[in-house]
Amino acid sequence: MKIAILGAGKLGLRLVEALSDGDYDITLVDTDEVKLNTIAQQYDVLTVNGDAKTVELLNEIHVSDTDFVFSVTTSDDTNILAASFAKTLGAKYVVARVREPEHMNQLNFIKDHYKIDMLINPDLLITGEIYRYLIEKYTLSNGIYTFDRIALIEFDSEKLPDMVGKSLSEFRAIMPGFIIIGISRNGKILIPHGADRVERGDIIYLIGEKDEVFKLSKKVHSRFHHSNAKNVMIIGGGKTGYYLAERLSEYGSKVKLIEQSRDRCHYLTNKLRNVMVINGDGTNIPLLIDEDLDSMDAFVTCTGFDEENLLLALTAKNHGVEDVISKVSHESYKELIAKLGIDIVLNPLDITASTILRAVRGSKRVLSSVLLQGQAEIMEIYASDRISMLNTPLKELNLPDYVIIAAIRRGGETIIPTGDTIIRDGDRVIVVCLVSEIGYIEQLVRPTGRIGISR
Image (tube, rainbow, N blue to C red; front, side, top):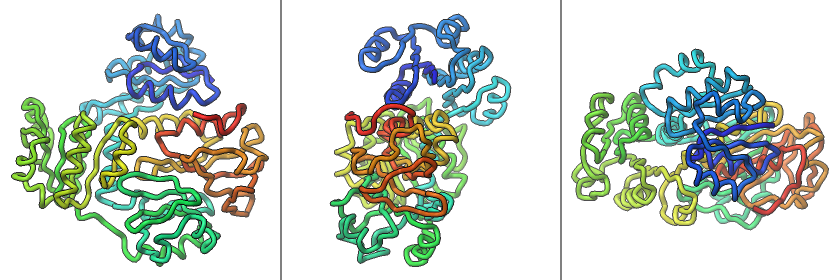
């Protein structure tokens, strides 16, 4: 399969990282030759220096033979034109990243007029995850998500007090028909394994037979848990802050949006209704206190600086704000995040890359998928006789800690697997993987290669 990635910025590089584990012929285009040389030394990709929106360059990379084109430069106009030209020249499927709010009301027109298969907006994607957490509380629509006769349920660990303190191995002995496939703890999704223990305050993601899950739901979902996000403070008036403020104000929340740039504040004031836009430095704690930080129900940090986002989120948590969410783009903060006690930390690059990769995998290999708090993805994969994870006990696949085989559907039978379970041709397999490591799924579903390659 041939893939062209136009733009070697953060998202372009994230896609290269994720796809490099698959059986793909990847071409990466960018105007920065130094950056391309660095990437070429790390990954097995063909790099081409040039302007992605020129027909000459697209012909040079033989875009007419390309299965997927991802136009993800920093310019919306370049992305739209490059994707449109690629489609006209014969590329099978084209995706363009579009971020500007001015384009949001005309997305269907852009898609139809420029013949683009998918338009993707990282800021809207992360806004959707934040909104679902703040307003619905459950990241699943009502706490349950179904895959045919298998169901996933989400609930607080206190709903089953006997579970608290138990290891995953002990839990399996008590409830053999279920498997815990994820734990949300201190703003981070964990993929649990045998020795890991459930703690008080954890949010549990559990899979089992649909009928049994719905029975369990009556015990753990005593009421539909909506948020009290009546008063929300957002730090950072960039695109994510703009989209989130707009959506929360439409819901009925009282939103205070703090932005340092005076010009940007004028823009936001003219564009947003029923949002209090404050021109000020979001890192100025006395300012936040003067603006009633202590009375906020939710606090969201989405500036362009990860360090500021994390420190301000920690400050809000120390002031007793119930729901604190932070946008962080760098993986290097993983360990720090787990110790801060922030409710949710989201990475827009991971969420966007995961969304794009679903198109690559296609409906024949990955039948459906859903995100867990924007940090882990649960997928239903069709196990054909050509993929390499067949006919081997799961314990011999040497799966990494960030992946778990959660359930197998074989004919009319649902299998909650153990280490001795073997995947057969025709099985439907439920796999959970951290979004930050989603490239590993390419190893699971590609026709050739070995599982368990060290990363």
